[in-house]
Image 1 (spheres, helix red, strand yellow):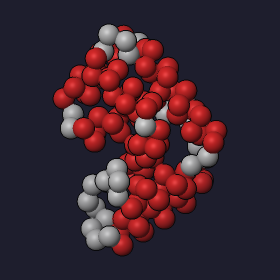
Image 2: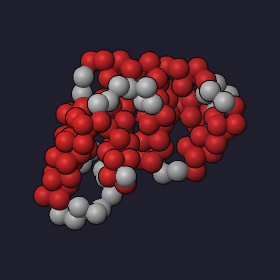
Image 3: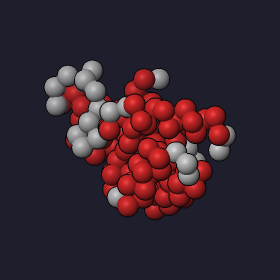
Amino acid sequence: MDADWLDQLEEIVAEAEAGVAVVTVASVAGRDVPLDGDDVHGEVRRALLVLAAGGDPERGLDLNGPAVVRFAEELDAPERRAALAAGLEQLAADALGHPHTSELVRALVDDPETAWRAYACAVLAAELSA
């Protein structure tokens, strides 16, 4: 991974609130997770209904909220989890010398459930903003 890009990621992770930092790192690590666009769009619509059922559909996403949890469950597949785990391991190797990023990546490696929800949250946020 490009050193300048890693420096920028380190700055983002160091300055962001914890939830944003976790989702950002999971998004970077999950860039090679195989997703089918048509399936994702249907899952996004269902997550949006769950979000709306909880009140204001325009509020921010919560890593442990029902919309993100359900979306993560619907995205879940062994090959996707394996791709995220591989991405986290690669990012851990690339991020040596970037203490904030390294620490966060290690935490996600040690907690695959949180890593998966954070990745799903990143996908959901990207789809909702598109």
